[in-house]
View 1 (cartoon, helix red, strand yellow):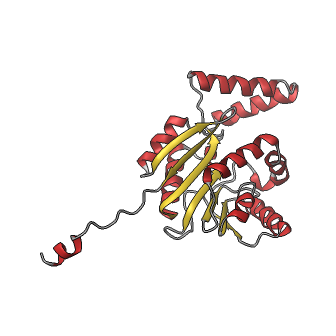
View 2 (cartoon, rainbow, N blue to C red):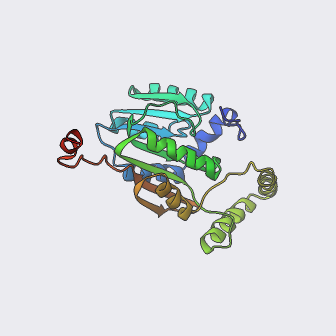
Length: 243
């Protein structure tokens, strides 16, 4: 199990407040819209947290597996699902890079603001696992912060907007910036990847129909699918048998 650098087990209530914000509800709704859930879908939510996305999908699909490495987050998710009368959702405590799920068990895989906690090699491992558990033709929709600390125009705009927003909070904002700077130096800061990097990683992992849609502020959503299984060419079996 991954080390809990971010203290998620102690941040359940705080995360619930963030998840209930208008901005995150809009992100959830866009992921659901792009996912195009169907009644026969077997869905997996990676980095599910307390279930913002998983609980929205549950009424629209056959079943949902909500994966997260924080037992406290999953405990809250179970309680919320029970309160909502959701019975087709189960939780799995796991690292996104090592999913304890069977091959080709899902038709839809989604994630919302989880992948930036992984470095790029970690993202690649998680995407390889995502492809493994998806059935041929299965869809993937991942929303995350997608930018880098670079001099590119969009990256500069995202960073400046974020810094100015934090500074408006006064002394508390300055403390947060200094704390984040310390985490960056220590290698414990969030590690978002640029949209172009996401496209490259998905193609390299064998996905097709890859596209990235830029959303508000630093957010973007990557959409792709595992290629359908190719039909056997006519006569292939007969030719092999006669050889």
